[in-house]
Image (cartoon, rainbow, N blue to C red):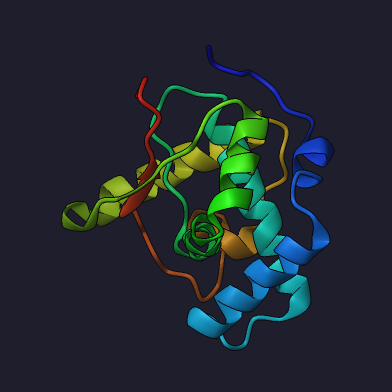
Length: 151
């Protein structure tokens, strides 16, 4: 069954403040040293929107590089990640796709992902999506995706 809509506020509330803070710390330490707390909170919001939106469509979703960094941190928190996915109705697998980096396909995949997130009722933060104007995020990325069985 494909879920067609989530309440964005309720989905954001699936992550407790301590986990949100830990994800921000992880991304800051591993990938993005200049990440501020405010930008980190926004990144967690974009991650949650991305993951929830994957459950509203049957097409493959791909995160931006910045969102993927938060996803990597979340996946490492196996129990909270599994609980979050259960709250959405199904485990969302993170599937690296290293050999298929194609800028043109990456831009198209990101555009479709952003469209799907918006259609699911979430706000897109342009700082996290290159197609939306992220000034220093030039990635046209299709290197990771969700991979529910039915896709």
